[in-house]
Image (cartoon, rainbow, N blue to C red; front, side, top):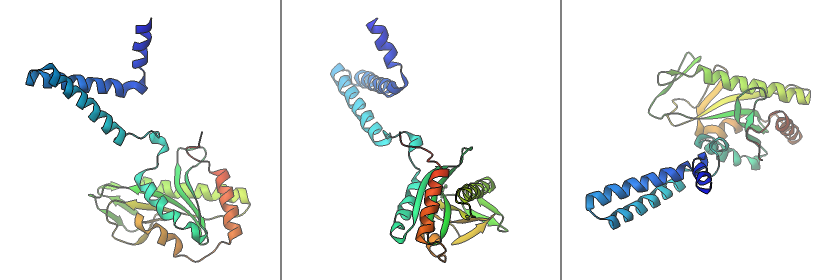
Length: 234
C-alpha cells in the first residue's frame, strides 16, 4: 500500500520536474559511465546533471503562476507610468472587461485625461508600417484585429465608468509597441494611437490638462469598481 501511494504521489503533475530530473541524471550517468568505463564516474555525472537541471529550473521557472505575471512589455510600461504618480496620475494595471476575455493592460487617469494603454512586444525583425492610416502591419501580418480590440476595450471602459459616474467619460485607446522600430512618433490608426513603447509617458503628458484632482480620484474609484482586476489576489 505504501509503494502504491508513493507511486501515485510521484505521478502528480507538480512532481513532473522531479521525474524529468531523475531521467536526466540516469541518462547522464549511464552514458558517461559506459563511455568512460566506471560506475563512480557515471554516478558523478548523474549528480552533476541533476544539479545543473535544478539550477536551470530555478533560473527559468518562477514560483508565481504564468497567468499572474505581467509580460515584459507590460512591466516596461508599468515602470514608465510609475514615474507619473508624482504628477497626480493614477494607474490600474491588468483590468478585465466584464463579460469578456479582454484585458486593459494599463488604465491611466490623470490631469490630461483617461487612457487605455495596451503593451505589445513584437518581433523586432519584422518592420511595422501603415497603409492610408487605416491598416497597420507587422511584417506581412495585418493588425486590424488588435486595433479593433484596443478600441473596443477603451469604449467599454468609457461606457462603464461613465455609467457609474452619471456623465460622459472619454477613454483614449492606444498600442505601445516594443521590439521593432516604429517609423513615426505617434500615429492614429483606426482611432487608436500607435507609438513606440518608449513614448508612453510623453504621449500622456503632452496633452492639455482637462481633469481636476477631485475628478481624477472619482474616475479612478469608479474604474476600480467597474473594471475588476484580471488576477485578483487570493
